Length: 177
Image (cartoon, rainbow, N blue to C red; front, top):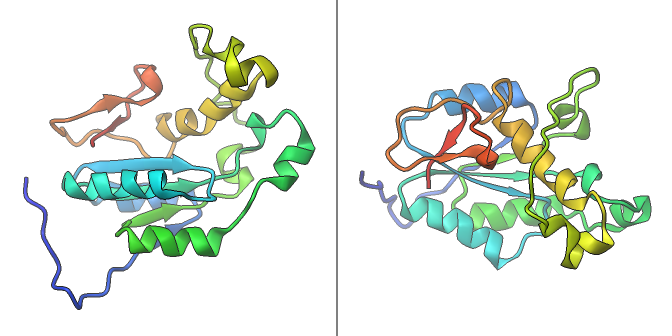
């Protein structure tokens, strides 16, 4: 698969989605594999490199920014977490990101629906960071697992040759890159 290169003076546009259904409809219309970088914002070079890597592999580069309340044990830590959406969007745009998913909390954790998954972290959640922040890893894994659920935004395989099962959970979602 080859990547189309835009002329130097071409303006790159990045779509911003806040609703699962809007992102789902847009993704369903794509013919290239999806490279997905889930983040909590406050982006750094590592996040941007994931986007660049997706583009080098001829993928549609999609990032999410979602400050996930379930991975914070102390509500004060959640309050203090840096939120820089305008700066983050500008950084993603500079890395040629194609789409940004910035859902509100209610979109990821809709009232009356439970997409919770239990994951076996093989004791990782008991050492280092996990030792001092019980529940951190389980909370951290919830949004990507929800995005990968059959009714979540990044669903459906288009037969990509390089695929990876989402969250190692044998969910029907596949991502390339």
